[in-house]
Length: 112
Length: 114
Image (cartoon, chains in turn green, cyan):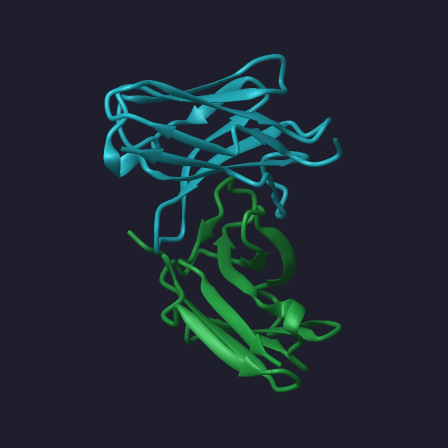
């Protein structure tokens, strides 16, 4: 039962342009959302998160938007850089629960 | 080291053999998690430990899978009588406590069952 879905398996973007990654979830109990970034042969590393009490969180070039009514979140990377080429996982949890539910990931390729 | 350490990084085995995967969490992290990622899939939760106890084993795919944690530190995931569908990257993560939001992942153990 996939509670977190990333429907785009890959995204190619030119350096300097915006990357937009999308994520949908089905469990209305989720109240905390995270994005992880993964390079080949490395473990996922935390990138940015957002609580359900907010609709936007920004950290440098990375901004996450949350639309609770649509059960949708997105990650914007502006401007995209070659070092951003990686797999990005969306994850969600219920506060005080132990389990993070992950999407299947979106592979981002930034073209020079 | 300072991060989560997993071994082996790569394991190729024959169908029917047993394998052990090891995870050494960040020092002081009481919570430890095992996830796996099959080809084209997201991270699938397997089991978590609070200290040495595993309150929820429901994510383990079958009774061929077991895990233990000793001394509140190192954990071992054992897969008995491996099958080809067990081929995946097995990721271990740790956190300061169970309900802490951010997990710190190791590099994973890639298991290939021939």
